Picture 1 (cartoon, rainbow, N blue to C red):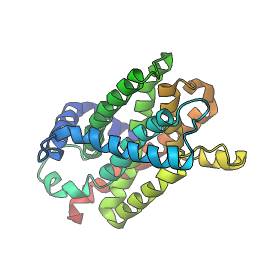
Picture 2 (cartoon, helix red, strand yellow):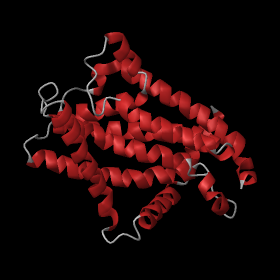
Picture 3 (cartoon, rainbow, N blue to C red):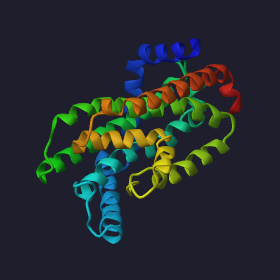
Length: 267
């Protein structure tokens, strides 16, 4: 628990540095593109269109989900998936890809995954704004359920940050971990109900699938954007999610504190 408190204090004390590094990261990522950050919106929208065509028309035949048009249901799920799919692999390799810089600078190494996650969060918020406007212009409307969005955004960030403390440490020590992370993320696209609905599975199998914390976040975004529920209606599942995040945060903090003094040795 002491390691967890140390890491959290470092995030608070270094927030200005994290913000500066995240903005710099965002700038250099799109520096060579004429459209710049617009590609962070254009690419997801192209992928969304393809998934909508294949799964919405090709597989589902245009049928909605519980009275909600499939394109809205799919958009809400893919919106958060684009964030998770970018933030988890990139934060996992954030430390070992910057070891040369870290060895020459004096700041807490725990801010490295944080600033990478924050830079991707900017892109996520921009895409969220575009999709929300799209919902409003096409008649989906807006409801009080949108008030949940800050909560689910915070839940997604905390999940990714807690996981990144584990994966970024292990990846620095054993590079093969990064390949495992990438492979698992490819599977998660299909093991999480983002492109398909789980109602055809047995209740036991659905319960097993809910052990995946990403399930909670994806469904939470749908609750908020589609107005289908509130987070407090899933009290037990909400408690489970935060217990998992807290356990990962404690394990990740302990690993990070234990090994970070040796990170430079892995140059």
